[in-house]
Image 1 (tube, one colour):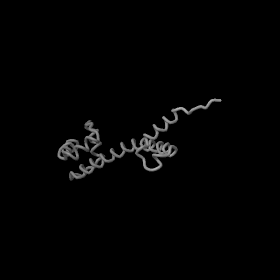
Image 2 (image 1 turned 90 degrees about the horizontal axis):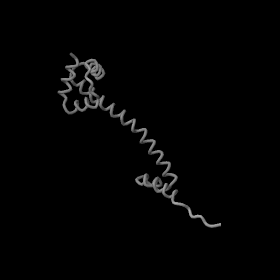
Image 3 (image 1 turned 45 degrees about the vertical axis):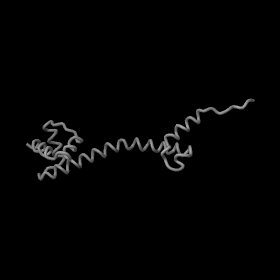
Image 4 (image 1 turned 120 degrees about the vertical axis):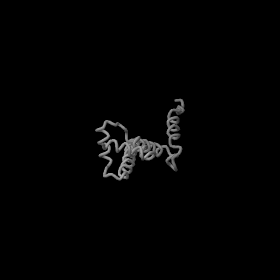
Length: 117
């Protein structure tokens, strides 16, 4: 029986996985079995944190808007502000409102005063 030389497909797969894990530290970038485990773990974390990033930014925007609205001096809160925005049919999203709150507070004050009326 003739000798069969192993093909390149398994080596190609391993090098592709190694390229993914080249920035990992220690055995996580050297040993094939731990590379595959860490790759799965990294991809799971990336998938989970994509949703978490959206949540965190929304929380940050809400906190910024609330801080500026409460700093206006009126007894007025974030939820009343958003409720009145919807009643007046002013559809500004929270990201834009947070940017206005940081960069141009007087503009947000005028928006809130117009919404109160």
